[in-house]
Image (cartoon, rainbow, N blue to C red; front, side, top):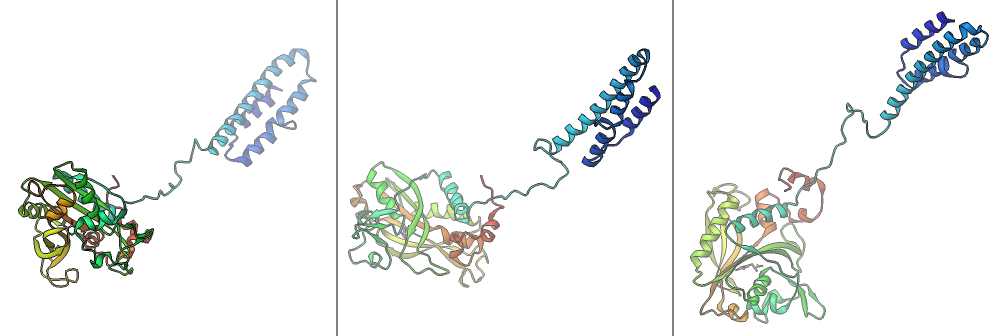
Length: 339
Ligand code: DAH
């Protein structure tokens, strides 16, 4: 009996349980009701009392050994099938990394530059009334910008979707917390045909400074600083005389083409200059409309289109790409930090 026990013990120790199949084989051979150990227990019954005690003890030890080995594999096998113990050699699951929208990236840059210069950020409503969008800003009653073609009117034309962020200038001045030094980013709407270059909604950043002794030189200096920060140190600016109802004097600002450095390319239409914003000194009548005394205060304002600047900075040729949510387009901006 002892010999049999020892030889089965050796078998058990040598047995390699590597998978479910060999595990089942092990059970069949040793621990099942018809296995070798059960058979030995049957044989034990026919032994003399004197032998029984010793053999019984060894047999129990053998049984424990077999069961231990069985349990060990079972635990390992179960663990492998739970989430806690994954196979570290498996290929990882690819995580989709999102990216900021190119418009947001440009806006963040603009905000950083102006806040570093001490500008605050203000916002106003997208649904506006005629006063804030037009009348207070000196738009004559018959100005074409009020035409149904340009403006989305709501409810008996009493309200409209703002056509520009200049409306927020009015709201800020009306609060009368002077001086003002703020930029106002936001979405604007125009009843225009959607093409590669124009859209029925887009984004602007408005700027407004109202204080004592604000001059045209301050405006020019601020814009020059901004442009160099955004497009590069070597960028030049050019102010061209223009007209806006709410500024006097008014100007449009061109920057030296940062793509060809003024030599001439398709972006600047071979002129060496690219237009990026409108600006001017706040018209005294606008100050009066907003209860600001033009005898004490003066100010400047500017407005720029974020889409246009984003397109220039990233060489994007079609504005419609901005709102199509095409993942192939958006993924190209992943290299910009998310935070
Ligand atoms: N509101 C003008 C537009 O949408 C842009 C603009 C021009 C804003 C001159 C200004 C400004 O503040 O001074 O076309």
